[in-house]
Image (cartoon, rainbow, N blue to C red; front, side):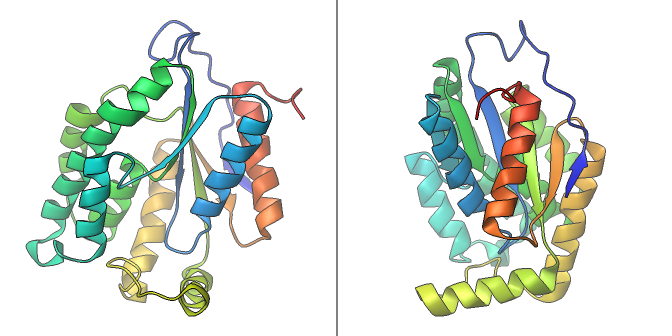
Length: 234
């Protein structure tokens, strides 16, 4: 199921000029399957001859990866959600400057596993940080460099948490700082992403993640193909 406005991007002389690459982000709660779909889309585009960059947040750049470990290990949790948000945006600024913008300038398709919407959902909707803080941080850090397309993979919380637990059993390791939150947190998180999608319908598309990996991947490709005029590319 697709929800949202699939109006094609028509920018040609502004931020996304004819020589600039494309910027796509994937969003969703824990266990939604984003990382799998990011990889599948990146591989499909690369197989068709497009230059691609697969990256993630927090992370991507060396500094971003250090901040990622710090955040996911829960070392900032006791300092509150505002402190977490500031660190996420510190990592995002470095990520943009060191990796995302240079690759877009070089004509690559940048496929990012999470971006600024995650901060609004996790530290905002689920943790109570005011939207005005994110408005200011987005203005300072992101500016005109929002993704052209954001794919939000939506999944009922109960299903998502079962996936997280199953992954832990099969792959080992411990649940991270955000996976370990209670169901109420994850319900608010899901609602936060849906609110973001409703407020940004020209950029955000919701895909039902409670389907097979192959079906979700095909819906992702249909979304990307329609948005960027790739319907003729098989």
